[in-house]
Structure formats: C-alpha cells, structure tokens
Amino acid sequence: MELKIGALGRATDTNVETIRYYERIGLLSKPPRTGGNYRAYGAPDLNRLSFIRRARDLGFSLDQVRALLELSDDKARDCATVDELARDHLAEVERKIADLEALKAALSDLIASCCGGTVADCRILEALAPSTTSPAA
Amino acid sequence: MELKIGALGRATDTNVETIRYYERIGLLSKPPRTGGNYRAYGAPDLNRLSFIRRARDLGFSLDQVRALLELSDDKARDCATVDELARDHLAEVERKIADLEALKAALSDLIASCCGGTVADCRILEALAPSTTSPAA
DNA sequence: TCTTGACCCTGTAGCAGCTACAGGGTGCAT
DNA sequence: ATGCACCCTGTAGCTGCTACAGGGTCAAGA
Image (cartoon, rainbow over all chains, first blue to last red; front, side, top):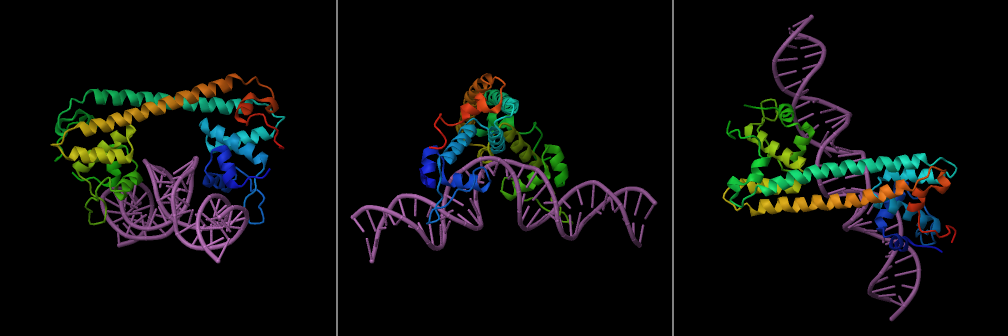
C-alpha cells in the first residue's frame, strides 16, 4: 500500500503543501521516493498524520503535538505527562474563553448604545475614542 | 505639545516598534521630523493611536480598525456601517467562543478517561490515534 | 571639552501555521 | 504525440507584531 502525497492528503483531509510543510519542520519524516521522485507513503505515515490532524483539531500547537508524538513513542512511560499536557491545554482554552466572554460583554454594551444617528454622534466610536480632550490641544 | 516616539508609546502603552509598524502599514500617517530626524507627534496622533489601541483591545483586526477610522473621519455619515462592523465582530467572537466550548468539552472527556497507567494504554493517545486499524497494513 | 547613556533612526529577519505561487518534471490516456 | 493531472523544489506571502544589528542625536555630568 503506497500513497502519493495527494492521496495521503485526501485520506487525512490535509493540504499537500501542509504535508510538505510538516516534513520540512520535522513533524513527519522524509518518506522514500519512487523512481519519478514522488514521495511514497505507507500506513504508518497515514496513522501519524491522522494523529497530528486530530491533535491539531483539538487545538494543540505543533510543539504540543510534537511532544505528544514523542510521548506516544515511548510506550513504557507513565502517562502523567500526557495528562498534564492535556490539562495545561484545557486551562489555556478556558482562559481564552473567559477573555472572549469579557470581549463579548464589552462589544454588546457598545452595540446596545448605538441609536442609529450619524457618525458624528455614534456611541460606538465615542467609546473607542480617547477621553473627551479637545483634539487640537 | 510634541511627543517623541518613546513618549507616545508610554502614553498609549504601545511598543515603539509597533508604532513604527503602524506607520509602515499606513495606519498612522508619517509625522513631521525634528532637526535630528526624530518623529514629532502631536495630540491628534495620540488620539488616533489611543483609538487604535482600544479597538485592538476589543479584538478588532487591523483591517477592521482601518475601516472604523475611515468611518469616524466621515462625520456626516450614517453610523449603520459602524454598527454593522461591531455586530459582525461580535458574531465572530461568539463563533470563537462556541468553537472553544466544543474544544473544552472534547478535552475534558479526554482527560476524564485517563486512568494513570503507562503510555502504552493511555486513553488520551488512544483517542487521538486513528481508528484501530493495524499499523502494518 | 569629552564621554556616557538614554533615546532615536533604518532595514531586515523572525515567530505560528500554514498557503500560494513560479517554473519545472512524471506518467497515463487518448 | 499531446494533453492533462499530478508531482517536484524553492521562495514569498499572510497577521500582528517583536527583535535585532548597526548606526545617529542629544542632554547631563566629570
């Protein structure tokens, strides 16, 4: 079972440029080549790339994915590190959500105050503008 | 009232490199220079940069900020466009929150399934790994 | 007067995580 | 023989900054 890069891309829902990029940064190893210098991938590559894509979908950074891959290669190891990585990531996601919630509240306030006049007395722009100091100071 | 770039940066809590960057991309106009070729900013620049920073803090993209600035220059204009921009942005923020919530749920599931063995039977890695097909197919 | 030090200048390269070319080669069908 | 889909390499672009290197300016202190 040999896959060319296009087939691997279709199988994992990954852009071919992205696959080559992963190879370039060492996330995927360089596959053997066919006579015509095409990359020839096998099942392990497919598995590895699928793993990467799932982790990416879950929002892990490439560095985190790299760490997860290394951990999963070392089968005897205690899985506490994996757990920690996931927990750290979860905490990060929660932080982001909190930030966005605050943002959302601020934006909602802004929007609620718009009463549809002209820009000259738009409350949204007013809220963004610096505290009412005369511009020609 | 003249400000050198450092003072403007301190006044608006902005890195000087960022100010120069904003100038380079045309978000701030090129200020006059002193005899020693230093940028000399006035109050309008301070106001404009403050506006930019607040909008950025609210998560507007530089392109959106650019649009807001253009809109606010045209005082006679109907402020519906401003309102629309803000609403679009709010929708975007809400979409991001929803995505992150989904992510959070998936991660929580993952973490809940970890039972602290070795990596060989770590459920987190298992969940990320491709559906149980033999690797050497 | 000289020197130190804080500030300023330009230009370029780097970060994440891809994506999009240009300009060529391969391989199969018609 | 030709067309077309696919592959190759290498490089540059995207967002929104940030971080240099390698210089110039200017005010204060010795």
